[in-house]
Image 1: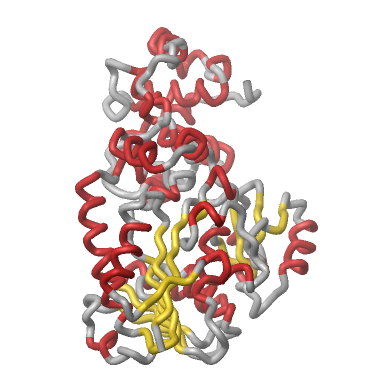
Image 2 (image 1 turned 60 degrees about the vertical axis):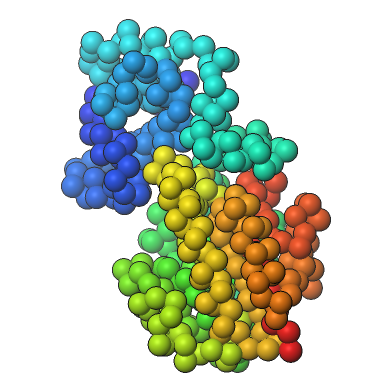
Length: 425
């Protein structure tokens, strides 16, 4: 199919990696990073083949397991590796030594009729997620299909250091297939995933990796120069940096998170960005004294809440297998509490934005609607209108009003949700 020749070395290392990844004891990208660090002699080509096959196995794990039955991928990682590579490149791409005694099993798996498999298997989703998505969306089939496709690489141009047209011109010199993003005025989309860390524009902080939908969440916060802003769940700081860029490094941004390890990831990015208005702080809880001191003083508060992350399955396909309904119930309980706590910081006339990278109404519309009922001192703004005044006309906005919703099959981005509230004066 692809003209690629797959060596036994690739098969062996892929099988070893899948044996770890399919235990779902941690994020697949972190497991893969450790694996490659422990196998430094692997060449760039082989690493690429192994990484691509690993993510393909995760994206299409439901049909892989169905085709391998009665074998189980995690218990038969070598067969899982062979079937995955054969699905990608054709069985002829595998050398005879790689197949050894598994050729019959591989050919059987490739020949399984998938036309009558259960709908959730065909959608490559766990049953609980399939049921929720199909109940919520009339166009669930194309949405679920879009989640099985690898995502492009989106960049955000740091307005403090560069303009988008300048960066696009520079990317053309790299022969990179780069285009301006459709919706975000700050974004650039790359078809390929190059080694960005080697590029001067990345090392100098002129660009950051950030999905286009995530960039627009920062525009919904719409911070003005000189204001006081809180990113209540800052994590590694992608949205924090976008907010700082919009503010041209004026005012003050408090980047809070209870996970000090995640927050530590903001340090190098902040240094590259050139921003001087960001103040990261690890807090013990949403009731931390440093949070309470800001009550009623903040112009803009962003609550980028912990969630199922099911809107990011194009990039994190292992999430759908690591996450379950018990965890969904747990994070859903946290979401409302965080939004309530963060609302105390907003001063009269200030803005509160609740955002997730989930597709599920339980984590999105339901949380926002409950907050609106319980907090009459806030009222919801129409997200599409807030973007339109900034020159962004988002397709399909009327379908989800007043909320902000982006979906991979409609917008070509990860799945995002946001609700924009204003505190009454």
